[in-house]
Length: 387
Image 1 (spheres, rainbow, N blue to C red):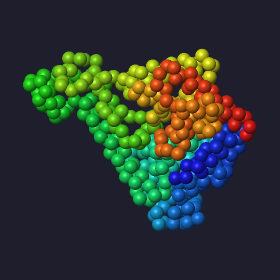
Image 2: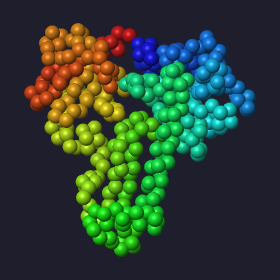
Image 3: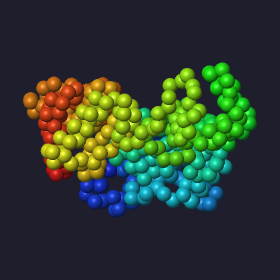
Image 4: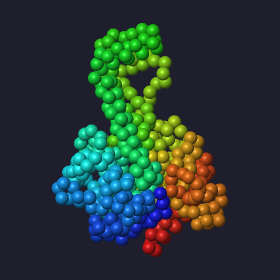
């Protein structure tokens, strides 16, 4: 994967948006300027007819824009739309999925050159139920998702197996939720046996059945960023969370299950990382005091702070006892005062696209953090202005 070329595509999208040209970019222009270069950056050779078949015709006479292959064997269909298209035409998506199923093409991508929606046609169900994952090139680049569309990943059937795994996990989740909510006798009997093994006695079957039905069940199974059947919403807890309004059944040796928290506390291990969460709230207060206004966009493992909706100024990575501040600026682009205490991370692997890191361990470190954020903001705003 050529990250440099993908960042060039990202910058092209930003230019279209900054110059209010989104609506003027045609479907053909979107394919030429954004989509084709994107797949080329992932190793696909458009000059090789055994890898890329342009304008594959479906039974209705309509043409899918590209069919990506392994030695001529179709693996993934790409449907391109204009940059302004919101990609919400469910009828079109359903038709393309049906075509994929009939032609034994396992994967479908719907894209407007910025947003990419990936579907797995072999999942049982309708269009929405076949959704696998999605990503956007606007803002933060997500290499873990983008890399799944690389030629080697697709041609080796790793993406196909990835989709199958997501389908299996989704069906397991549905089955577990159904077992608990229906509380049929075999499952009640299984629960009773587990209770007896823990406390040496059992409850009445009717008591267990009513208690099971009173549970609020949320089963989150982590399969990296797979979200089969629903838009991706961020991290999953890799656990079963079961909350009950009836505490009479809580006679168990296992640790108590705490309610799931919402909002930013999810990014601080559900509120258990109190020190870093406190530092984060102090940082927000300082930004407000300094009248530094940003759009705050939580991602899977970090939080983006943007201006003009798409331009990332800095990112915050929550740790147990401190915060990592990542700037897009190179360390050498900072003032000598700004460089002090910072680390160059431009050439190491990381989950963000940051180039410079500063660790916020104590409240006194917030002064330096604000200085760095101001420098990064000024640099980015000047860059936008001078385009």
